[in-house]
Image: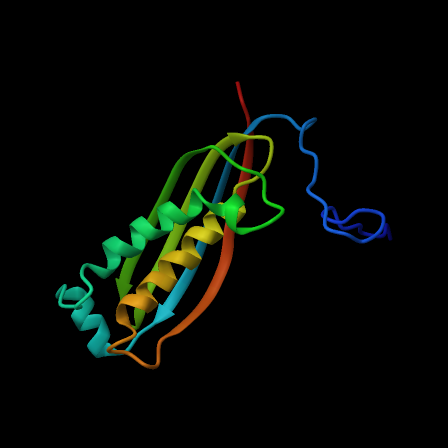
Length: 153
């Protein structure tokens, strides 16, 4: 079995930003998901737009979009990516809010960190906006749903 090597460390084990200069530019797509578990009373307040801080789902959506665009500033070894699309959907369900983010770029490297960052910040925004009324919120199940790369025609 071939030994796996870490791509983000150099020969001395120090952090290293990977050189993607020789990679092919492709259409990159990534989708991520996360969930925040909420009390029924909190869900009702969100549904009725009665939270004191305002429209929770719209604020979370915008926060996720803004965060995706800042990923390289937040995660030290991420490459700056010019996103062509970032979509964040915040869906109220029976026991909380499901957040799904999709990031798209035409780049030499993937956009999974942007999708995951969007989900995390959207969930943290929901947490922040609801913390005064719900002391038992749980952020969980944050993961990458898929990532793709497509050759350009």
